[in-house]
Amino acid sequence: MNVALLTAAGSGTRMKQDIPKQFMHINDKPLIIYTLEAFQNHPNIDAILVVCLDGWHEVLRAYANQFNITKLKWIVSGGKTGQESICNGLKCLEKEISSEDIVLIHDGNRALVSSDIISDSIAQCKIHGGAVAVIPCTEAVFKSEDGSTSNTSIPRNNLYRTQTPHTYPLKKLLWAHEMAKEKNIVNTVATCTLMVELGERIYFSKGSEKNIKITTVEDIDLFKSLLTSEREKWLK
Ligand SMILES: C[C@](O)(CO)[C@H](O)COP(=O)(O)O
Image (cartoon, rainbow, N blue to C red; front, side, top):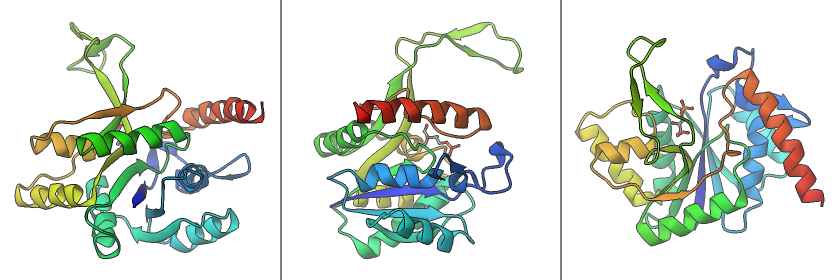
């Protein structure tokens, strides 16, 4: 069984809007529904869990019904950090699915995740025991101490930018969060960074420049234009 765990518990302060970004309507539907549809429509995804902001669970359930997201099985509350939110989702799954089942952790605001990305994530996880979606770094990268100047460039040829999904068997994720508690590792940026802190090797899966994280108002414009071009492709 393959289960998508979507994180949608952020309050979206970087978007500077009255409602959380995952519930903002873009064209004809809320942002989180685009992400849910990507997993709903993938033949190898069996069920979906969403880690959601308190106060928004019923809204999410109503939208899921409206847009026929039948694979949405569980909605759980987020924690104080992203790491805690993911842990809450995993604790729920521990009671519901087998520890051998595969869990794809995905940012709820990466709404343009493609079927190929999901398929490759599952495939690489089956081969290597884990998979993290990445894309090569194509820009020059500088390190700055003061935020406005630099004299340190970092060669980009072996740099990769991580995206999501981050995909592992449930038992590996539960192990990582147990170890994080034991070692007092808190507030890691993502599952992949937690794994690295625990000494694990990360195996890459396919990402895409289009698999954007919608964080700011500018990202919404980009999302809308990418959506139009993707829809045109489907219609051809
Ligand atoms: C998980 C992630 O998408 C990898 O690039 C990213 O770290 C998420 O960051 P956020 O600050 O939780 O949106």
